Amino acid sequence: MKKTEFITGSFIALTLVVLLGIFFFQALFQPSYEGKVMPVDNVNLKNRVSLHYVLKNVNNASKYLAMHGMRYFNNRSSVPSQTITYGKSKNLEEGSANEVTSIVVNYRGFDTLGEVTVLFISIIGITMLIGGVVEKKWIKPSLIVRTGSKFLFPFILLFGVYIFIHGHLTPGGGFPGGAVIASGFLLLLLGLENYRFNTKASKVIESLAGLTFVCIGLIGLFTKNSFLANFIPTGTVGLLYSAGMVSLIYVVIGIKVGAELSTGVAELKEGNKND
Amino acid sequence: MISAIFFYSTAFVLFLIGLFGVLTRKNVIKILVSFSITETAVNLFLVTVGYIEGGKAPILTNTIGSIGIHNLKFVDPLPQALVLTAIVIGLGTTALSLVIAIKLYKNYGTLNITKMDGKI
Image (cartoon, rainbow over all chains, first blue to last red; front, side, top):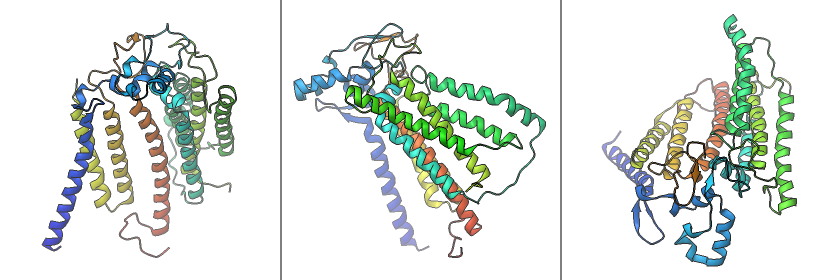
């Protein structure tokens, strides 16, 4: 390598590193709406739009914005809101105790529909590309592995179902629950000799779950004039039967993701023999 | 309590490690691992944007009790929701690219990108 090439290359690399560093560390200094630049350590939720997601008063905030215009940006905290108490507050605009779930499934449910679609397309891609590629190199599993995977499978399935049913109360939700279910099927695929994963049935289940998701969205469209709007009463914060359609949609997503990821894992092991 | 600058620095260093791997490695699998590291760095960066010192995880529980305009104890939940989406899409792309890597190995008999020439 010539010396000039080396110098040019390192100059370009250094410039890239410095630019990336500026990009990463500029988040430390965010301008507030009064025009002052303040360090990120002093930022609290009152300066951010997430305040309304946390206090569950998004509808109030949009009404306030329509009434007062730009004055809203200087005092977000004067939007009417109420104190939310775990296990006591009833019939809020949005009833899930987990704020991330309330954003992912309710306020931005359409994004989640797109996300599920991306996962679906990637699994279709795997199924298309893997055909006839997989080699059989099978090491016979020992007695402990066979018995253990048979014994553990129902419990893993139960744990996955628990995660996605409690998605609006605890960390987790449809996607982690589905991944846990897929890991149970992976255990069966690795541990049992004669186990055949029923790809067709899992595809049918997955399509039905996706259809149910869209149908729930359409019910919202016809009853509340907005796609994926919440049409079920939200109930008390913190109970299992609360949050309206959030828990319903998370159950559907959990089934869909579990079936999808299991199909992907099974295709990676067995290849596409049927087609 | 940890200052946010620690997380920003970690994300930056992880991003540089991933970028270095993508640019210098020859093995397809190692390139994919580097992509995953870069993705983790970006996710960490996004979560850190919503980090508030002393804030708790944004889930109402029995111990947190109640939340109102005068006692906000949570970190920002919005970037976390964004990262949840990003993680799932990262899973999909990683699985698809691993399958493409298997196909490449079948076709060329090697995973080294410099030795993959025209023979199919």
